[in-house]
Amino acid sequence: MCYTPGMETDDGRKIDRKGLEAIRIRAVQRVEAGESPETVIKALGFTRTVIYQWIAKYREAECVNENETPLLVI
Image 1 (tube, one colour):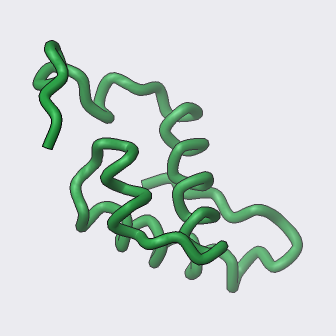
Image 2 (cartoon, one colour):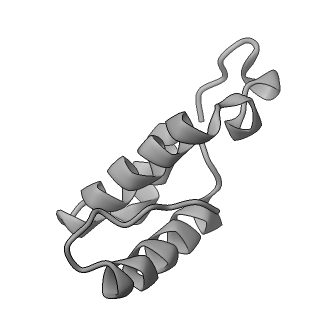
C-alpha cells in the first residue's frame, strides 16, 4: 500500500453529496462493465465493504427506476 501525506485526513466525509453520488455511480458502472469491485474501490481509496453496499443499492434502485440512472444516496 502506498502512503500519501495527508491521506489520513482526506476521506469521503469531506466530499459533497453530489460529488460522492457521482463517485458511487461511476464505481458501480465500472463493476457492471466487468472490472473487479476490489480494484475499483482500492483505486478510489474507500473500504472494500463499501463497494458491495453501493452495488446492492444500485441494483435495488435499478429495479425500481428502469428508465433512469439509479441514484445512490446512502
